[in-house]
Amino acid sequence: MESFKRIYPFLEIGSIGRTVIGNEIPFVKFGNGPKKVFYNGSIHANEWITTPLLMKFIEVLCKAYVNNIMVYGYEPSNLFNEVSLYIAPMINVDGVDLVTGNIKSSSNFYTNAHKIASNFPEIPFTSGWKANIVGVDLNLQFPADWERAKEIKYAQGFNKPAPRDFVGYGPLTAPEAIALYNFTLENNFKLVISYHTQGKVIYWQYQDYTPEESFNIAQNFARVSGYALENTPYESSFAGYKDWFIYKYKKPGFTIEAGFGINPLPISQFNQIYNDNLGILILGMVQ
Image (cartoon, rainbow, N blue to C red; front, side, top):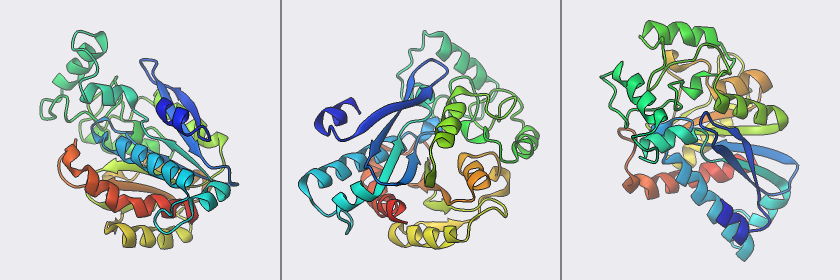
């Protein structure tokens, strides 16, 4: 992102907050338009391929803007003037570092994570790790029926720090979730997309709070990507980021499950994932 800023000085680079370890959670802003849109990725550690997906999109968008080249049928100068696109490509920085081997096995954080994982031997370490570095699932941290999420996950055996599915001891207790929550409160986003893997699925609803236009937007996303529209499985229907956004603002929020297979998806899928999602990423700006 620092390289992007040097090459494309019209970008705004900042931080939405810090992780457990103290790493910055960066964001980039493209455009100066009145309509604000927000994309994020890697809330789950072993879904890190969503980060290069969003980074590639930033690069393509900037190159198109500089060279005045149409991108997916849209004039980049019009997008720049009409939309302010905010992208936080890696929310769970510490967790991604754990899964990708960038936290030394001799560190206290690695040792503690390994201890947490040892209580769940059926989940491979580190490839099955979705949580933040202290075992809280960041996409189960938001005040949208959090208590119901707690009941479901506790009944499944995730009643303490775990590689995945532990809701925490209360909503908004993990610093990464707090940062994402506060950043959203500070901005009047018209639409948000939270990128996950896998399944080639688009989730677009939250209970009875979903705005009417969400279905049409979701249909457009499905049309350009080939992904399926589905209802969120009941056991995963609460306390997610997009759930809270829809509940709080009654505006369109989406979870995109990119790619297909077992997480973490191999980088060999990257080109297909990017090609499938380019239309979504552009249409999200113009809805």
